[in-house]
Length: 128
Image (cartoon, rainbow, N blue to C red):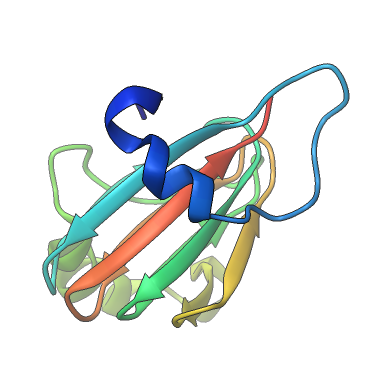
Protein backbone atom coordinates (compact mmCIF):
# COMPACT_ATOMS: atom_id res chain seq x y z
CA UNK A 1 0.00 0.00 0.00
CA UNK A 2 3.02 2.35 0.11
CA UNK A 3 2.99 4.66 -2.89
CA UNK A 4 6.76 4.70 -3.42
CA UNK A 5 6.75 6.34 -6.84
CA UNK A 6 10.55 6.39 -7.00
CA UNK A 7 10.79 2.61 -6.93
CA UNK A 8 7.45 1.74 -8.54
CA UNK A 9 7.11 4.79 -10.82
CA UNK A 10 7.88 2.96 -14.10
CA UNK A 11 5.25 0.31 -13.31
CA UNK A 12 2.58 2.85 -12.34
CA UNK A 13 3.30 4.90 -15.49
CA UNK A 14 2.33 1.87 -17.59
CA UNK A 15 -0.73 1.02 -15.52
CA UNK A 16 -4.05 2.51 -16.60
CA UNK A 17 -6.37 2.41 -13.56
CA UNK A 18 -10.16 2.30 -13.85
CA UNK A 19 -11.38 5.79 -14.85
CA UNK A 20 -13.55 6.35 -11.78
CA UNK A 21 -12.54 8.64 -8.92
CA UNK A 22 -14.02 10.23 -5.82
CA UNK A 23 -13.90 14.01 -6.39
CA UNK A 24 -11.24 15.79 -4.35
CA UNK A 25 -9.27 12.63 -3.56
CA UNK A 26 -6.44 10.66 -5.10
CA UNK A 27 -6.23 6.89 -5.26
CA UNK A 28 -3.59 4.73 -3.61
CA UNK A 29 -2.19 1.65 -5.34
CA UNK A 30 -1.35 -1.71 -3.84
CA UNK A 31 0.63 -4.07 -6.08
CA UNK A 32 1.01 -7.73 -5.21
CA UNK A 33 2.56 -11.01 -6.29
CA UNK A 34 1.26 -14.05 -4.41
CA UNK A 35 1.37 -17.83 -4.48
CA UNK A 36 -1.49 -20.23 -4.99
CA UNK A 37 -3.49 -20.74 -1.80
CA UNK A 38 -2.51 -17.40 -0.29
CA UNK A 39 -4.93 -14.57 0.25
CA UNK A 40 -6.29 -12.06 2.70
CA UNK A 41 -8.81 -13.01 5.44
CA UNK A 42 -12.05 -11.08 5.90
CA UNK A 43 -11.69 -7.35 6.46
CA UNK A 44 -13.21 -4.11 5.20
CA UNK A 45 -12.08 -0.60 4.26
CA UNK A 46 -13.03 2.14 1.85
CA UNK A 47 -14.05 1.56 -1.78
CA UNK A 48 -11.74 0.55 -4.59
CA UNK A 49 -10.90 -1.74 -7.47
CA UNK A 50 -8.84 -4.89 -7.77
CA UNK A 51 -7.44 -6.00 -11.10
CA UNK A 52 -5.74 -9.29 -11.89
CA UNK A 53 -2.78 -9.08 -14.26
CA UNK A 54 -1.77 -12.77 -14.08
CA UNK A 55 -3.46 -15.78 -12.47
CA UNK A 56 -6.87 -15.96 -10.82
CA UNK A 57 -8.20 -14.47 -7.59
CA UNK A 58 -11.38 -15.69 -5.87
CA UNK A 59 -13.37 -13.11 -3.90
CA UNK A 60 -15.86 -13.61 -1.06
CA UNK A 61 -17.99 -10.58 -0.15
CA UNK A 62 -20.60 -9.63 2.46
CA UNK A 63 -22.48 -6.31 2.74
CA UNK A 64 -21.62 -4.05 5.69
CA UNK A 65 -24.61 -5.19 7.74
CA UNK A 66 -23.73 -8.91 7.50
CA UNK A 67 -20.55 -9.73 9.45
CA UNK A 68 -19.05 -13.00 8.21
CA UNK A 69 -18.25 -15.98 10.45
CA UNK A 70 -14.44 -16.14 10.60
CA UNK A 71 -11.49 -16.16 12.97
CA UNK A 72 -9.11 -13.20 12.34
CA UNK A 73 -6.02 -15.43 12.56
CA UNK A 74 -7.36 -18.05 10.14
CA UNK A 75 -6.29 -17.97 6.51
CA UNK A 76 -8.86 -17.70 3.75
CA UNK A 77 -7.92 -21.20 2.59
CA UNK A 78 -8.55 -22.62 6.08
CA UNK A 79 -11.88 -20.72 6.26
CA UNK A 80 -12.86 -22.14 2.87
CA UNK A 81 -12.12 -25.71 4.00
CA UNK A 82 -13.51 -25.53 7.55
CA UNK A 83 -16.18 -22.82 7.85
CA UNK A 84 -17.57 -22.33 4.34
CA UNK A 85 -18.99 -25.88 3.99
CA UNK A 86 -20.93 -25.48 7.25
CA UNK A 87 -22.65 -22.24 6.22
CA UNK A 88 -26.33 -22.47 5.32
CA UNK A 89 -26.96 -21.15 1.79
CA UNK A 90 -28.49 -17.91 3.14
CA UNK A 91 -25.28 -17.19 5.11
CA UNK A 92 -22.84 -17.77 2.25
CA UNK A 93 -21.05 -14.79 0.75
CA UNK A 94 -21.39 -13.34 -2.69
CA UNK A 95 -18.43 -14.71 -4.62
CA UNK A 96 -16.65 -14.54 -7.93
CA UNK A 97 -13.30 -15.30 -9.55
CA UNK A 98 -11.48 -12.61 -11.49
CA UNK A 99 -8.99 -13.43 -14.20
CA UNK A 100 -6.32 -11.46 -16.11
CA UNK A 101 -7.69 -8.18 -17.39
CA UNK A 102 -10.79 -8.34 -15.20
CA UNK A 103 -11.55 -5.75 -12.54
CA UNK A 104 -13.70 -6.03 -9.42
CA UNK A 105 -15.15 -2.99 -7.66
CA UNK A 106 -15.46 -3.41 -3.88
CA UNK A 107 -17.85 -0.94 -2.22
CA UNK A 108 -17.17 1.05 0.92
CA UNK A 109 -17.19 -1.04 4.14
CA UNK A 110 -18.04 -4.32 2.43
CA UNK A 111 -16.46 -7.34 4.13
CA UNK A 112 -14.25 -9.28 1.74
CA UNK A 113 -11.66 -12.04 1.69
CA UNK A 114 -9.52 -13.20 -1.22
CA UNK A 115 -7.91 -16.45 -2.26
CA UNK A 116 -5.29 -16.69 -5.01
CA UNK A 117 -6.13 -19.77 -7.06
CA UNK A 118 -2.83 -19.61 -8.96
CA UNK A 119 0.39 -17.70 -8.66
CA UNK A 120 -1.11 -14.26 -9.14
CA UNK A 121 -0.07 -10.72 -9.97
CA UNK A 122 -2.60 -8.03 -9.12
CA UNK A 123 -3.01 -4.34 -8.42
CA UNK A 124 -5.65 -2.60 -6.35
CA UNK A 125 -6.67 1.04 -6.47
CA UNK A 126 -8.08 2.35 -3.20
CA UNK A 127 -10.36 5.33 -3.74
CA UNK A 128 -10.41 8.26 -1.36
